[in-house]
Image (tube, rainbow, N blue to C red):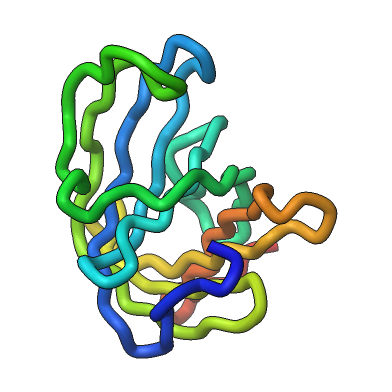
Length: 145
């Protein structure tokens, strides 16, 4: 995923958040973004589904690109690294707002409201990203502290 293939501002992709109860890695959430041309770019988020409040940031560990046709998978993975149970929690569309070296900003509906997120590649480990909620405050609200 080093070159962020076919990810350009203005593109719309499917996005999926799955709860994964893996025997090896434990409970975590899988964030996937993509379409038929990119496959599903994937990150494992160990602490929580997604950051829910503006300014909140979570670790997101880059995973191999998954097949687009598997984006709705739910059920048992019987063997391998991901062995365990997968349950889909969110599915929808994202709009890519900006992309540059190791950064993807996108908007979507999350928990019933418009939201913006930023994925930022870590400088020490290319597999470690930060997933940051950058949703602008609603008019009349103070920005997050």
